Length: 393
Ligand code: NDP
Ligand code: MG
Image (tube, rainbow, N blue to C red):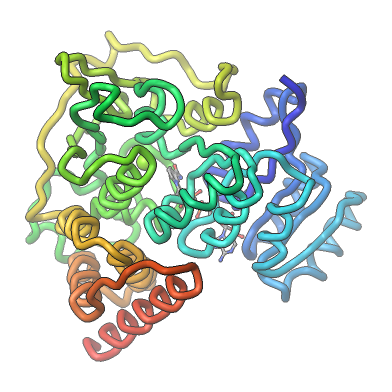
């Protein structure tokens, strides 16, 4: 295989950092040609000094001059651009054949779509974009002729347990997809226990170190809800064929059950570099720097049913998926506002599910026509969520 040119979107984040770690281990296979960040200009400049990309993009235009100053001081000569559209342009052009979509939230939608449309190999971490625009993203992918390899560990696991390509599940003898969930930091707690929990407690995940937004999503189980929606689109599985199983150790990353009773699982230590390395090198395998799994030291493996009454966000995600249309985009937008408010101290933990539910009720689903309408509905959902928050205070 030749040298792959990789655009790392969200390079300064948790997935971005893990991706660059894998790339650094294989300079003969991968080169980071485009690095992007939102506002962390110091971290972006440092990454540019280390990885020498062709182009660095800072999403906040006010910080372009500061980035230029830092890169000049470090003696780094690469192109510099700024603004949301510059990320989309960088993805679409000839600087990369592979795009790691690791921006957090709906802010990643345009660049994810652009990678699909232009036939790049799309390594999808940014689950919010497929939750928002599932069918549109798959259409763009088909039109562009590229391929999508899931980076989200559960979907990467399922991808590994399915026959190659995008198989027809029924024809392949698949009976169910089983997504595992760690249960997050509040597994086993009651609603009463959760009333006063803080952002610090919510962000302290037992097994994974991640960005703050996905950490809160893991604590509410909304992350698993988003992943059910993601699995529905990625693998063409009806909602009833997707199960969630709590597995606190995070060693079994997900499973596929076949009609003959076989259940295939992918296991590994909880380290995102495994899924990232798999997606980068697929269909070959490369060293990810991850320690071998010592199963004897981990036994016994534990599994249990999720508590949908306490963690209502998971039930709301299933409800939005079954409602169809753009309900999952509304769910996602409301959740982003709710998580921001919780992190800022303006909403109690249990209020996250309440706010998402209120916005879903206020904006019944409409058919998805195109990206413009979808963005407009996303904006309306955010506005509704902010208004409900204001009125509650
Ligand atoms: P982080 O918060 O650690 O990183 C987010 C990255 O996106 C940063 O580089 C940030 O830049 C950039 N960014 C944020 N907002 C914008 C914006 N408006 N425009 C452009 N860039 C922006 O997140 P994670 O790495 O944890 O997660 C990234 C995505 O991957 C999420 O969708 C998450 O759900 C998914 N994911 C993450 C996993 C994990 O283990 N972390 C596992 C599976 C999926 P800056 O640093 O400048 O703010
Ligand atoms: Mg996941």
